[in-house]
Image (cartoon, rainbow, N blue to C red; front, side, top):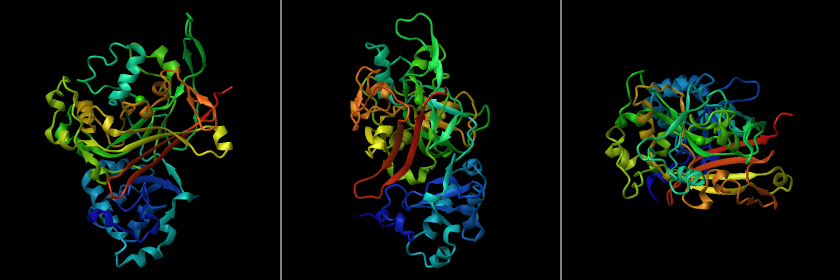
Length: 435
Ligand code: CA
């Protein structure tokens, strides 16, 4: 057992907590009843109020600067400070919350003002997103979806050169737990010659991770790939809800529009690069014959340790399953190792033309499917475009999402014998279309 396994806290619920042990300390924005939203840190089944810690004089120097930047209803000012203050805050909290902290009684005396029970709190969007970009770096997803349209040539020739993406819609991002209304849209029924405007019939989820941007760059000044990681403030789960029938009709020639912009769900906790450091690994080797990345996307250190080893899950719970008290059913297990491009390559590419990234911008990774059917990150892939329905524990079948279905994304990393780090959940229930 290495020393990292021994980080125990006097907050008992944190010890052995699958998501929020003392090793994780993700950042978020929360509120208690009758209180305004404020910055906090998840520890076990509690949220540490950064404002209380600051006012009680528990934080100094850079750690205090970081906590001060988290006093409002968004973490944008904290993201803007970059890695130094964020790391100082993490180190200070790890020492304050450690089991062997001799001053712990003083902290315990602060009671729920310092440690609010998470079950009594509301979690909010962690940052105000100025711009949201959705990438397409899940190569198995790109291949699976490409196959549905072009069986002989699933990947377009640019895929292995360009980290493909499109500019998404920031205004309809919503925090986990927000219900998602089935959208109306233009769709073209098979065999029809004219579209109709109806509630989407092929509603789907997309299993993605979200990447929160830190300091960012000035307009006209690209971020070098060697510096790219310094501009990442953290990670979350991301469900890019998609109306496939709308998408199929509208996406050419400029890409998705209203099929994606009705809602995207974000998990509330920002898992820091520091917490994920033990789960960095080498970018999986490109298949033989694939081109090397162009020089502006190539960095030896990034190739050595720029990938992330995070397990990802999709669970589905229908209204009937909930009524029958059946547990949500896992319908996919995948991994961030299915990313063809690293996060640093995404940051470097996005800014390569001089486009400025700003604190609180959000990237979606793109759907992270694995190579096998049990690792499909969307129903489009899992049911092969609706051809092979999925059977649920209740006996119901699904080709696409029905009203009342709840989609739950989870993510966790763990090394043999070591502590696990979790992202919490990203949930959303489908509401019927407006009458
Ligand atoms: Ca997507």
